[in-house]
Amino acid sequence: MAELALRRELDERLLHLLGALETLQGKRDEFNSCVEQGWFSLSKSRFAMGCKSVSALQYGARMEPLVRVCASEGESGQVAFQVIPGDGDPSAEAAEGSPAVEEIGPQDQVLRQRKGPGKTADPGPPVEAAPEPDSQNGASSRDPLTWFGILVPQSLRQAQSSFKEGILLAGEIASLQSDIEATRAQYRALLERKRQLLAREG
Image (cartoon, rainbow, N blue to C red):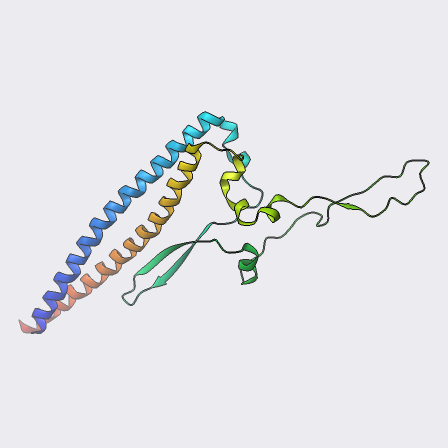
């Protein structure tokens, strides 16, 4: 009875492993397709807007992640990776424990009037500079498409969509790979138990 249950469990682990490998191959094909489509759309955007208009020179001075990855370990040892959109308030996230970005340079930028050689009047209170657009637009300013202008071509939006889908697929692929490694370890352990059981019976 013990040998029969062991063989049944071996068959279940093997079928699960084969199914996970087949799913992994399909996800990898989808991921490669998304990345290829993303780079193709990005090259079309560079052709339409110019290479200098779509390059690292337009990257924002302050970058904030739009997604975060949560990892959870299962009972069998496999790790599941979940990609979660980071739509929350960045200031609230920083208050929860994430390291805050250190500001370098003067914090209060003001415009002051200079006194000429014959002026003795008080220049008056300083005029504060206009706030940065990031504090006005909120979450909309976090969209990387705004780095390249207000009216961006559709190909650039398609590139962003393809890369976003690729990020989600990357999380699924990582989870499948972890599941496959855990299943392989379980299968090897079951095979070793079967060898020991046969050795005792022999």
